[in-house]
Every structure is written in structure tokens, then in C-alpha cells.
Image (cartoon, rainbow, N blue to C red):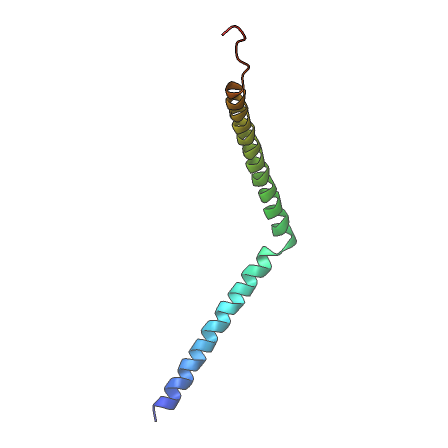
Length: 82
């Protein structure tokens, strides 16, 4: 006899818990997709992307210069008098 009310209350509790969780997630997603938040996050991403791109280009130039120096040293014309 006690089983039916127990499982009814258990289901009710689970339903309320899942409902509250879903509403919180929905509100969080809605807040993240608000126009002012999208603008803020886009500006932040653009700044970090620019920094990463600048760093990558600098590293690429450095590696290219060292590789060019290696190739020039390896293929340097030999002394004709030697």
C-alpha cells in the first residue's frame, strides 16, 4: 500500500527537479544568445583570434628564416680555388 504513494511522490520530485533544471538551462542559453552578450563575446573572440594569428605568423616567419638559412648553408657555392 505504501508503494504507490512513494513512487508517485518520487516521480513528482523527479519531474519538479528536471523541470527546474530545464528552465535554468533555458534561461542560461537565452542569456548567452542575447544581442548584447553576442556582441561582447564576438569582440572578445576577435581580439584573441588576432593575437593568436599574430603569434602564428611571427613563429612561421621565424621558422621560415631558420630553414632558409639552413638551405643556404647547405647549397652555398663552393670555393673555385679549393
